[in-house]
Image 1 (cartoon, one colour):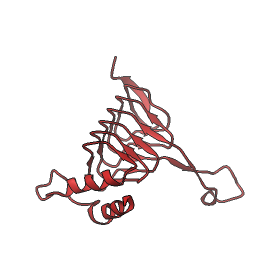
Image 2 (cartoon, rainbow, N blue to C red):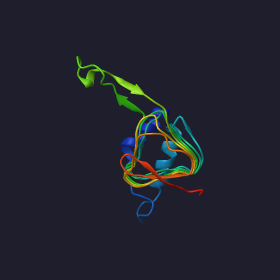
Image 3 (tube, helix red, strand yellow):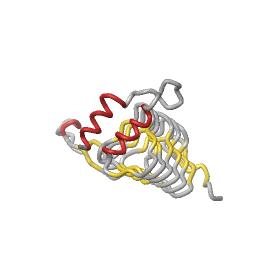
Image 4 (tube, rainbow, N blue to C red):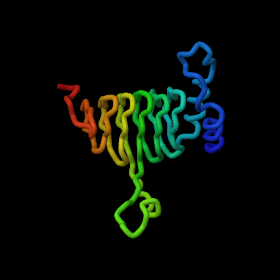
Length: 169
């Protein structure tokens, strides 16, 4: 049944109008309903923006939002009260490339669990690489590329993302 909700979402409702459009009607509610019903686990009050793509094997907490055109791979855990700007990418796998004898394409993939904590703001165009853990109460500035774990309360930005300050100091 989860796969049916997934395919209905992808084929019919993924790119329906956003809720701030006067002609959006009931489309945002349907998007949220479908995604909530195909995820591995989903809390209450999920908001799904236009074009959001999230794997069936991911989890989302309560009161969180999937940003416009976001792309979230499988095995990603998103906490409560997480908001994201448009075009956020969250990865959970990498290509293997250690052998020089085989093309990278034929070497397989390595899978990781990527975790986003509670009360996190991911700005527009943020990229989170596979296996990173983002702590609670974190702000990730627009355009940042997160390549390592981020501690609680940090404000990070840049490529690669570096700690700029802490919210609790």
